[in-house]
Image (cartoon, rainbow, N blue to C red; front, top):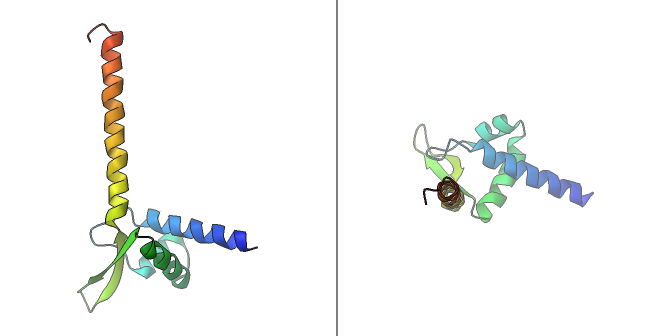
Length: 106
C-alpha cells in the first residue's frame, strides 16, 4: 500500500514539473497548477514542498494584488535542460563529422 502512495506522489510531482513548462519566468500559482493537472491544491502543495526541498522548484511572489506565491522551475532544472541541449549539440556535431567521412569529405 505504501508503495502505491509513493508512486502517486512521484507521479504527481512529475506532473507538477511538466505543468510548469512554459512558465519559468512568472510561474504558476498552486491553484493554476492544481487545475492544470486536475488535482487538489492540498496535494499540489505536498508535491511542491517536496520539489522545493529537492531544489527542483522555486517559490516566488508576485506583487499584483498582494503577495501571492507562484512556482517556477529552479535553476537546477534549467541546468539539466541546458546539459541535455549541449549533449544533443555534441551528438549532432559527431554525426555531421561521420557523414562527411562517409561522403569522402573529411
